[in-house]
Image 1: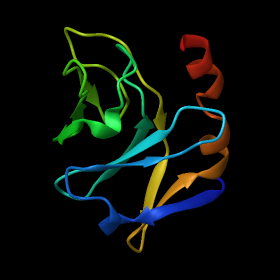
Image 2: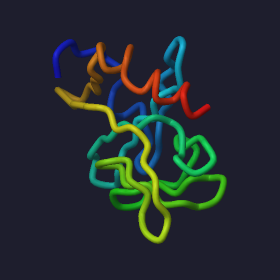
Image 3: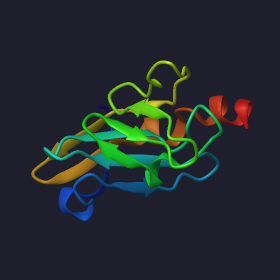
Length: 118
């Protein structure tokens, strides 16, 4: 992770919950917390119909899209079979209970990809 940007404290995200990180000029990023306090970040857009993954149900290493219940892997953003597609994952780190995303990635990653599919 090159330039870390502090997002929030781990405790700011409920267990099995998510927090949206707004991005100017592009789709938001969803930061997820698992039952065992692992943290993942994905573009807040299901590859199926663009549903807000931050509003989905987190279970294990996955999130269920709130629109059509597609299961998306938190590690890589891939839809689970029989569905197919992928949303963009983001590098995330937790240091001393603080969650960080890469500032450059946050500012640039998936902006063009998202606009092309919107």
